[in-house]
Image 1 (cartoon, rainbow, N blue to C red):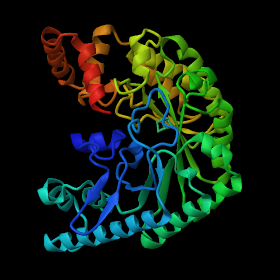
Image 2 (cartoon, rainbow, N blue to C red; image 1 turned 180 degrees about the horizontal axis):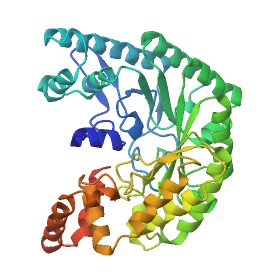
Image 3 (cartoon, rainbow, N blue to C red; image 1 turned 135 degrees about the horizontal axis):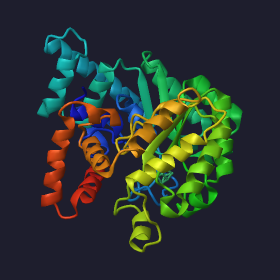
Image 4 (tube, helix red, strand yellow; image 1 turned 60 degrees about the vertical axis):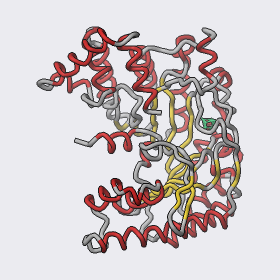
Length: 409
Ligand code: SF4
């Protein structure tokens, strides 16, 4: 079973579980810059900052870059960072020799580095983890790297591949609006230079909701951008926010999102659950009673409706975010659609006490799936915590669950 650090790494979007730091990792002689987040699937990728923050920065549900200003980084600056990573790679290897691991980056070496106060810099630790994972994957930060001129991006990609021939996959975030303005042949150029996957925040396919949440893109532009990425040969991940429609628009959110995804047929559909923090503009709308968030059960119903209407596509549905209640709802479409719906129904068929037991047990890391409820001893363990929570904590289980979810973002 994964330990808690690995679990958080795998399922959260933060670059390291320790937090967001200063964005600059320093060593005695070299430094390279890292942004605050990456997709959960890039937990062990090398994180390389190509632009800073988000050029749009207006989405109501997003707080990641709200206090930060967007800026481009020059190709020379990024190349210097790639050189810095190369120096750190040599230092990690040297450390391995010094500790008697023969230059290999092994579990004991990584553990030593993670615990060693001399190597607390995020950059050093993440390069060590990256090498441990084979030095194969790189994620380019921050929010919208396709905003760079195609030629500049190509230069960065080629330099990266030349410096580290072990690289097999290079991925990035991009806004659909930006991609929709590129020509297919430009996106194809990026693919030929080594860009393997683009992660796009679809969030919703419902135009009214996209506008309400100030996403700055229409459903039509989402389809156009998604199709361009697919046509270019680059793998495409589309992110959907479960719960984004709230009580007022959940049905339209699910149905229209399914429609857009059906037109794109992305390689991956990844879901993450909405959790609104005070630092997000959407919080004000909740306080004013304008936006009413869904309960866990309602979000599961919404997810069901979404999956039910995914038709004629061959995407892989992934639930890899720590905020999601039902992480077992994953599979290839169309063949595993029924299996996913059954997993959802299994949760929905539970009684209220069982549901509360599962919701708490999942969020404190005791359960991985609804099936775990029948594993001997687990349910009693969670029940004990549940009773304690209900008798001692003001606000009871809902407040505790909300606090736990807040701690994940
Ligand atoms: S485009 Fe992405 S990074 Fe930018 S504000 Fe919206 S959700 Fe946040």
